[in-house]
Image (cartoon, rainbow, N blue to C red; front, side):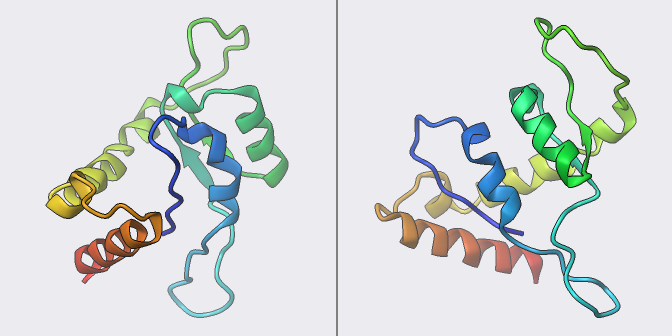
Length: 124
């Protein structure tokens, strides 16, 4: 799991590629960590041509609904998209920590440290 902080008014799709370049998934039976996921699921905010091209180049499958004004329509797996609730529940659980929800920390590195600590506490 990895985090990347942005300023409050910035859309997170702007930092999608740097976020995907960070982090690695540890393999359960040893070996080198996996650097890219098999599939990415996101909401309509991530439905842009640049994000889709980036994922296609890296060989990552996509489960992102298309916006109404997009021309190209493709198949969309609703069953896979419903599994996004696990991520949304993770965000909800992180926001149960008041220090994270209200952002008491003014410096980004301190906030990131608190976010990491809360994630570790959730993991354990």
